[in-house]
Image (tube, rainbow, N blue to C red; front, side, top):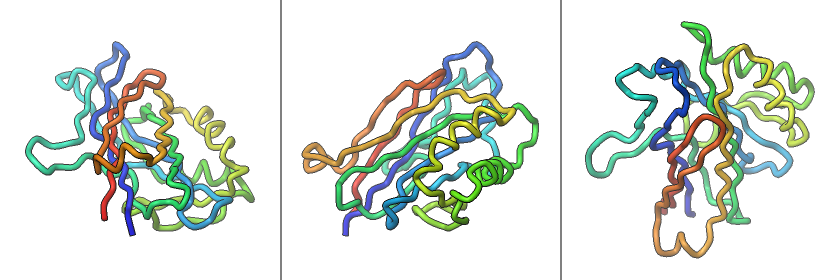
Length: 187
């Protein structure tokens, strides 16, 4: 059984401000329920970006065989396609309880929220919601008093290029950020 992993390797912010408190809202297809998606907030505390980082965060440590920030790990879907939405958020509060963001999403999706689960290979909890509730996630993020720096679609179709390479890097700009991430296949 082949597994797929999604890792964030680097993030560049295209804004003049130099101090940030970042967190990410990740939305992914549920691995077993076709009519559901999973939503999580990663990491559990905001990532502090200092002026000497020049608006760039590297998640992949120096050295051979290192990995980036794990966003998800799951078995390969039978369709060989995986849809992941990635929102980059800046916390305007000096201390932010990331659980509050997930609870705000849960409250706003109402009956479409189906409970919390541990899934997709990461330690943060995931909120299961019915696929019809997906548009509400973006609406909730627009009402949170934090700044939405950008949305990136990390949709991947695992085609012929993955037969030659087991890890492929992608670079996408969305809003005020550019994300470098990698999809990899693990036997």
